[in-house]
Image (cartoon, rainbow, N blue to C red; front, side, top):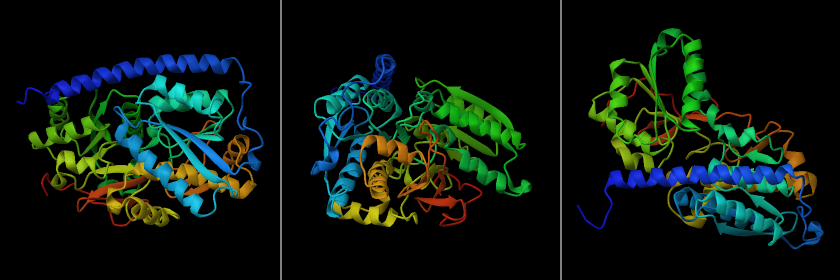
Length: 429
């Protein structure tokens, strides 16, 4: 082994320790933010720089993870924000005002994200703010935005605790909360004739604020429909070798495996199934499998076919605005449509919503954005969106499946490109 490099296990341990520290820091940051919010509205509110309508520019402040653990998705979000800004400026800006983005790095740190948004609002006096990546950072950031009366549209932060804050200025710009991400898979299964549905299921989920509740939500729905649970386990995030867990899953001989996963454990589950020569007829993975680039790279492109997951944007999407987004993205960044990160489309859609509010109302101030988005349904490249009073989206994800080594929409019928495979091919096929 190269003595100057950490082993894979050491890297995992380091990653988990950093994650533990971030969680503790996030809790502290949220506590501070909630304390501030409880003190009542701040005296320095939005549009503090004067009459916003008289300005030539519309400055949007964003804190993104350009370094640290969330750097890859953070940079993907930046591409989406930058693309929207250049697009809307080519169209003449927002109500004639040129959009200027002020993007700062939060280093994937919840304390830094709090500092960043406070400075963007109180020192830089930006007109609007857009959200960061991940619930971990969106929670403290949204508290700062609420404190100063700013709308908070965020492309990546749909964990349950985001909505438990009950903030009326928050809008999660995806079709549904993370916990409901698997609903579309249950909808699909339960529309099948009874004799074609799986009879038994096993559940293996990461002990995580997103993955475990999602798997539990699916288990309750499928059990209520008569699909018997033969095994269920929630494993700690310190567990890197999932072979023992998958061995217990395989022993139950389930027709269906529901994997409540993030990224690394999703790759580990597939690796364990291959080692154990266990290939379930049905396999649904919540996260990890929905990354069009990383997943085939990590598990092997000949091992992805037949796996179900969900998404809100995918190559070939017929959603209004999606084709224009892809054309602009490829013109600006190059590459191929299948290599576009979903986070870029979600961040781009944040800007699209502001643009639509401005066109509808003739205004682009925070109070108008908050009030306007709380009613109606809004069409974006990632789908038609609407929200409840606290920013939880009320639509649904699309069920996608790996077919011919490509993520392909398969349900519901109005967006499906092909019929779903009802039996996952063997590994390597």
